[in-house]
Image (cartoon, rainbow, N blue to C red; front, top):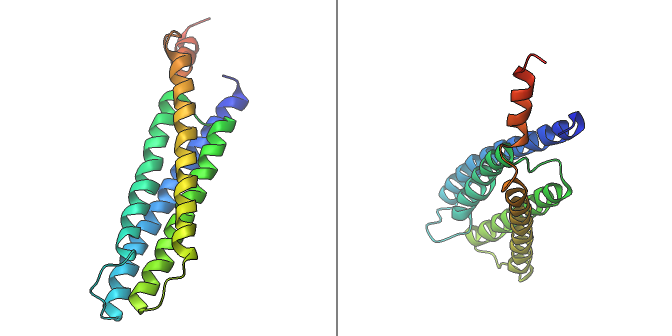
Length: 165
């Protein structure tokens, strides 16, 4: 792995870390919004706002922490497939959660939810799915590459760095 490749991988890992961190913050804030907004409007029914918190924490924060660990083990970042995964997945989460926000807020306010909201949420789910497919394709490639290759390349570099020659 060249210095440029390592720098690309390090940048990709940092992107996953930052994404996880942002989704953690958004997840906590969305839980606060749900609780306070429904309380302020004396709303006791079901709303999409209740699901926003969980989606942001599980698909966002936990998802990217898992990707970060997989990236550390299998050097996923620094490739075009990883970049495509990263953007499709993030745009998918953003659209999905934004539509949950709109749908939930309209429900709490007692307003009509436009037909475009669930349709757009469906688009967000499609983009999430495309991102996950790209992640699995990349992970499968890395597993196939390492099947007969012995130790991962970073381990080989550590051994080489320790040798006196």
